[in-house]
Image 1 (cartoon, one colour):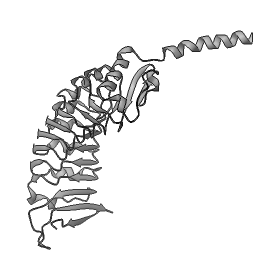
Image 2 (tube, rainbow, N blue to C red):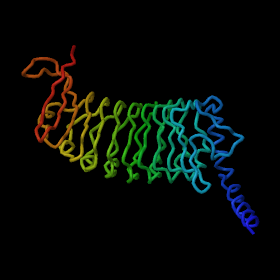
Image 3 (cartoon, rainbow, N blue to C red):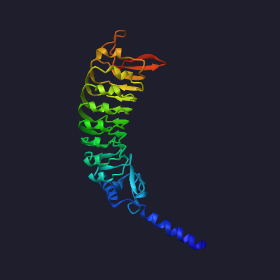
Image 4 (tube, rainbow, N blue to C red):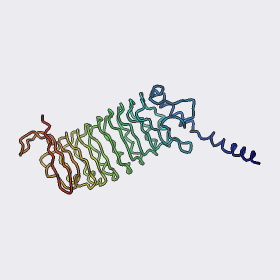
Length: 296
């Protein structure tokens, strides 16, 4: 009786093991990524003779590929259009590799994505205009590539966005007003691009914003005073722009924790030195100005 029962358990479990495999479409998409990014030379490679569930960085739930994390893994090549076949992905992290080419338009088919990290690669071309179709996105990191063109207005559709990092690219044009729709935004980094125009008024409503970096662009006009009153703002970087500097000092407000402004080109009255920047710090409700002379 015991032997029959044990045999029944083995027979019952065996089919579950057999079907715990992803679809051919998803597997082929992974193979395309492997082949187009020189997979045989990855830091941690895949044994293609073994099940997909054993491949480094591949996360599977209920036979669906839900995550792909190949961060800093020596990927060198381009991303295939079949990337869009991984339709159950919620996390895609390919940062810190040598991926070139453009961001595939098919990436907008990954409607379940909440985290997309492609920072520190060699990507070029434009950000797909309809990337805002990824409405569940919470983290979008394209830092340190060679992306050009405008910041897509469709980003304003990503109402769950908390972290948006586009710094150190070659993006141009204005900062779209639609970014003001991202009311859950905690971190916005657009520094070191070629952006122009004014800071959108909509950003003053980003009450959860903790860090804002707009440095190293060609922004003009006045800095919205309400930015410095955002209750959670810890870091505000605005240096190396073309702002109207005549009103910068009055912006100091006890509600801001740390702010770094560009103030080059004008001597400070008390020191008569070239002041390139100053840091505003909040300590126990008091504002402390720490002037930094970097002219030497």
